[in-house]
Length: 374
Length: 67
Ligand SMILES: [Zn+2]
Image (cartoon, rainbow over all chains, first blue to last red; front, side, top):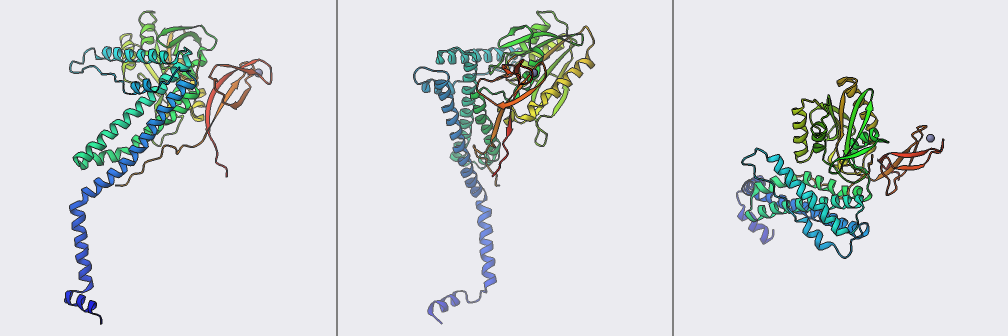
């Protein structure tokens, strides 16, 4: 028996191995109990940091793609990088909502000012005025701006949580991270479709409506928005969509207000066709029918349409094509494109059921009309 | 408390096609998308009746992974 062994035996004279294991276990539990949040904070920090790095790579890629497009396709003279960086940090300050009466008009004013500014700046940057190239540049810069914003906000909460050692800030951010990355990923994927001018999933409404407009005389009825008058089974159809194949969404709200107001049309129905976000588990390209104004965005157009319809007491019908956020902003998937025929059938049925011969009907194809002319 | 973060480049490969439709005989031709294509654009003459066709749809299909 060595000296060492004898020493250990002396120290743990009356303790057997199972007691020792128990002591170690109790120590382990005490430590985990006391430092649980700290350990989880540490894990959250490292995971958020990894996500943040991904977001940084994504926003840098979107910025670079936008600059490359401006130079290669837009033939921007000189290096537009500095101008693009200023663009990415440009803010639109939303109006105060303490006194909400009339706020939609104010929001509309600010959004319109911003859109006009974007187009003017992009136009000046490009030194060419091909509307498709200008509209694609606008969209690419908007995507880059969104990714830049997402990265900034996530970074803010990451640093704030780290600085204040706030467990709850970090854990909340950690739980949101997969969704944030998914959305950022969708935005980044949109860049590829936009650069090539391919129709996106959101363009399903415009595609259906363009079939009604083919060969008819088109007139501009609102900014970036065109309308044609056609006929279906004795009904007079006022068909509208954004002006394609540019990457426009147009102003369907203003257009419908104009048709119902200025033009004095008394429609018996307004039918809107739009893409709608599907829930997880729902099939892409599934069609849903409903009532109400089928249009997304900040809410100005929706308000205008609802107001015009309510004032004129015209029922609003909606035909929706289900898709994910990724599918809505990237090149149109086959399942969505193939829904076009079914949507046309549904539209025909709605018109036949809800109106009678001699009636006027407004049909609006809502969505980004990139790669879809009329 | 483990959640996974999907990578930015984990997308499936998509092939984009342009469908040309003949307004007279209804013949549909599927070809690869070319930059400048857009829905309703006039396209090649119909292979069946010789009338000018129009682009009816542009869509993407997921490429089947083979080998
Ligand atoms: Zn033919």
